[in-house]
Image (cartoon, rainbow over all chains, first blue to last red; front, side, top):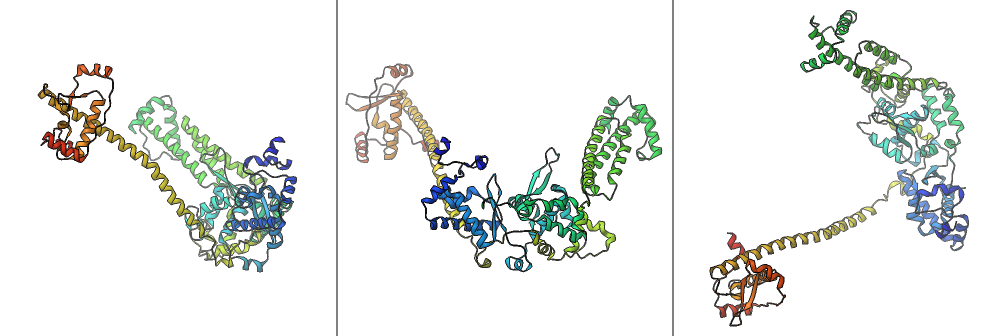
Length: 259
Length: 352
């Protein structure tokens, strides 16, 4: 404990295991936040929180998760001792002003994403943005992985895409370099995980859902669309149906920052 | 073929009888070997035996690669391709006699087992199995695929050979599937009329400028060092050259002293005179030459003989003096000593 005090930070027990990988930042304790807040005016704290909001909004354009390390380094800076309070206010502002939810998708590496809090409506979508065809490609991959039980060899994905006239080896007029889009961009955005299968010769990879997909994509809705496509009752895929409707993580992602 | 014959003779003499018999029966049963001529002699048998071994190996390899390539098709529950493959492998195995073929058979077994495992996992899936081929077909229909041919040509369709997807196919699918995503709308200024990108490039330019200058700094000292080195070498050469002159003049007439100024001064060039003085000083320093004053109190120079050299180097109590010269004194010296020609030929002139 004395050691930690010398470093001017103490850790809450629940977080202590997460801190090892982030030497630049240690989570301040509640009492420290309290003390830090006493020295600052509300306006100062709100100002910094607003900057955090702006930073995350800008970062969200590329849909790559925002890392806490970057957030502290570029925006929070000398206010890091009251970091939890700033994040709380930023999350509140996302929630109440923008209708977005700030989600920490990776509690180990501390990464944040924004997801839409509002229910999807036909009218809203047409205003917000033009349709993104990449989204459809992502949907195909995610649904194959989901329907195949969560893990799928890359070959199956490439073969399915080939049937849809998308060849990972060729440049697609809509997606460009398909292989790069799928294994790099979607992976960086945390929609997909692209993992090497151990002990395979030649080397093979498999796809999982990424953390962003878990938070952002509704398995139930995918299954519903599957039912519509196959002209079947979604419930006929018993296992998938159970998974889509039981796992709270997909339906309601937990927010760490608001608690 | 000739090479292999030698190997075959060594490896498989014991199998001769067996292979011969077996081939006979095989020819009757399925005619696999039909086009390779079967001679009556044992030698020919061996040759054919190697051919057969090769054929088996290549068939195994084909089988393995076809399984790997058609993996997804073989997985689909609607066909018996895996059984076909296994039966085919069984037929091949009848002729397996050597380790290499057996190893290939084992390899095929690994591949087939892997397929079997995946097939089994399909069985475990409760309720409806999910078939990606059907899924893809449904998606194509949804995206508005314009099928040129009817369903008969489905196999061709699967290869993506025909059927025409409308321009907005993927947009259509994106629109429908949007509801599955709870993606936050991306932030943009005024519906994208402003792009928030310009500042970064400026920074880059500054950085690029800094980098070469740092590199240039790093390069400078190394260049200087090199120059110094080469200069050093040049000096050494020059010193040796002058020593050569000094010795040859001394040998020409060992009794008469060589006047230092006459030796050093180049009446045509002040700068070369300075250089000569500089280089001569090395001779003195290294104990290869000595300077002394003659009866007229004028400086003279003489080389030190080799026997003297060692003694001189040991016993020399070093003395230093500074020779100064200016263009004015240089001219005076030329006049006084009546120097008309240089005793030390310039280096370049000598080279030519």
